[in-house]
Image 1 (cartoon, one colour):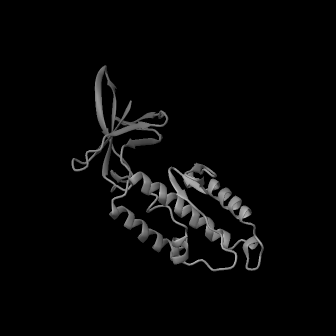
Image 2 (cartoon, rainbow, N blue to C red):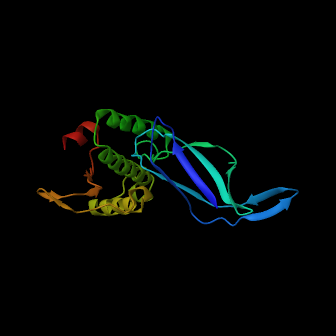
Image 3 (cartoon, rainbow, N blue to C red):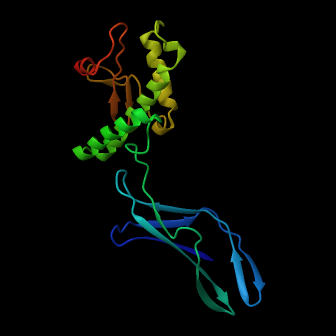
Length: 214
């Protein structure tokens, strides 16, 4: 039997559960007096750590338990590669970008301010997921021939297109509501409790001052 152990350092003290995704099939042979065992399997480590936290180090060790002439035997098993690994959960404020360096730098700098402002981490993650997804969709829309300069686009068609793009974004997991009733109106888009309202201008270029004033 192959035992798996994973332990974090004393500094971080994270509870860790380790298991193999499928049992290994050892191949046992003899070479002189040595006994050689080989197996292939997948190791899954599960631990509780919220997004935004630094990655603690984990030391992964293996040992083999069996019997030799009726006596229990426990032997350490060498691990090929890195014996100490660092894991952290996906962080929407650092790992999810639009894929364009000119925009990613500004987004990441903006998101970093949210962390220092002390907002609820779950809300911060949801906001970053939604805002980045909207930026990604907006970049693609800006290169779509249907939206070229001089084209006539109905506001309803734009909302339909944007909603479809957000639904298809894997980072949002399909959790995009539309038309939800709130207060005296209906929301344009809502993801995990975060709302986005979209404004369409037909003739006047949008500026930051005008967008924040509406």
